[in-house]
Length: 89
Image (tube, rainbow, N blue to C red; front, side, top):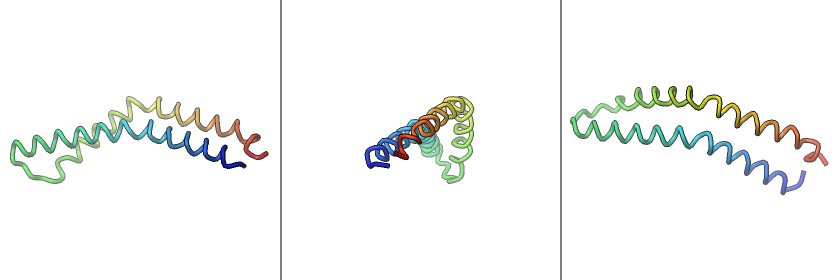
């Protein structure tokens, strides 16, 4: 296995990771900011109030993007398995 193929595999794995993680991180960040803004407006300073909306939004997003995530991981694994003979050389 040469450095170039290892670098390509690592780069592709990071791309897949970011493609999968960014929607979840962005949505939870937005929900957290909205809840924090509403807490500031209403003077409710409960720290645990942000967790329930974030969890609900993550499950909804997982339901919506679930097939996309599975397809991305499946395609990446197919690429890895098809590259095994080339990597072993």
